[in-house]
Image (cartoon, rainbow, N blue to C red; front, side, top):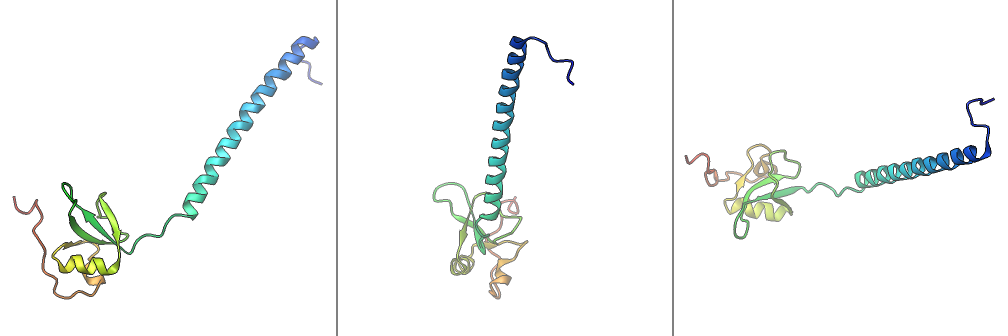
Length: 124
């Protein structure tokens, strides 16, 4: 049936050990990939809900709030934290700038919000 196998017992046993080692390597790799896929699926299904409101934070002492965004705003920077609706309203009323893209002031029904402080790039 398989004429390419060696005829003696010693080499056949060596081949058997070699193939057993490869099967163990393959099985451990399969288990690792299955574990990774299960963790990835678990992470996707158990991802925390996106916050309704976020505040973008500045740099420096105290990390002051810079801009208020709606939770899924693409323009929000990396330094941010989720905030409740009441805090978003309070920050906007305290002259923290509203994002010009997602317009949280409109979503929060805050009429006639002041323009907020000028951005550093507009001052140059």
